[in-house]
Every structure is written in C-alpha cells, then in structure tokens.
Image 1: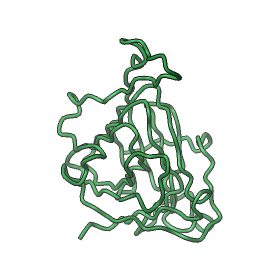
Image 2: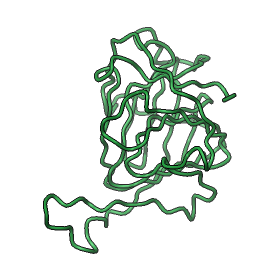
Image 3: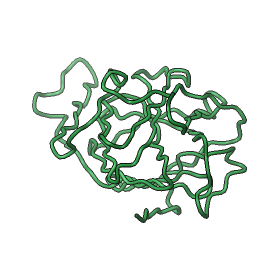
Length: 221
C-alpha cells in the first residue's frame, strides 16, 4: 500500500504552542456505545448517507423538494504517519490535512519513517451540518476516532475516543463532532462517502481551551 500526500497544500494551518493535553476516554465502538453518534456499517455498497436540508433563514420555510439536492460524494481518504506527524488527504473533497502529532508538535518529526507512538495529539475537530459521513477501512485496519455529541458549546471533556477493529465501517451522523480517523498502522486508506456540500464547523483546541485532545492508541481494556 502506498499513500500519496500533497503536503504543499495543507488546508488548515495547525494551531500550536500549548503544553497541556486532555486525554479522552477510550471506548470500543459497538452499536450500543455509538448510539447518538452514528453506527457501525456492514455493507458500504448499500449504506445511505443522510443529507440534511438547507436551513431556513427566517420564518419562510425552505420549499419541499429543495435544499437537499447536493447528494453525496465519495473517494479514498488516505492517512499516513510521517515521523511523528499524522497527515491525510481526502480525495472525495480534494483537501489535505495535518491532523496531529504523537508528541509535542515543536519536537515532532514531520518526515521520514513513522515512529512508534502511544497517542495522537489532535488540534482540531469539526462537524458537518449538511450530512453524515461514512468511512470503510479498505485494508481492514483498526483505527480510533474522537467523537462528541452535537452542540456548538463543545469542550474537550465531551469527547470520547472510539476504537474500531477494522472489520466494519463507521458512520458519523450529521452534526456529530469528529476528529481524525487515526490509524494504528503507519498508513491506512478508507472509502469515504459524505455530503457533497461538505460544510465544516470546527473547534480549535489550543486556541479555545489551551490544550490538545490526546487520543490513546492502545487497545481498550
């Protein structure tokens, strides 16, 4: 497997400069633990992503049959650890990202072979108000993702990390906060299906809370 990254076109410049972390609880992703966040996926070919109708701007409602016609887009979401830095490229929407590090970013190597790691320090999470998002691990690799229930008054304490064993896909419902799909392997590829509009509402942890979200990479107890 070879992941292709465009490191010259990172979509967001990471916020750094803090020396505090908030470690998320680590949960096994099951149908029960994901209630309210989304669900596990057995068959990506038949799974439908929910599209949310464009909200009314005032008291006049959006006409029936309009505001939800953008449909979905899909492509390969590629992730790779380079040194101690997690990069990704979402070919469904054409964006590249620097999602986090395994140590303080000022000390983290950003190139070369991936180094051993016990955590991922995530600087940013977001949600999609226009639709849900489904990912399917193409090579059956395990991963972990931080999630929080909807609400713009989100804090680091509201996030939990969900450990997925790679045998099933993951669906994240509209408006659910999520961070990077952090692979346990050095590289991973996911089939990604999501709303074509791809609106993003984000939280910047260093800027807003003076910390990084620390996602454990160990197996859950």
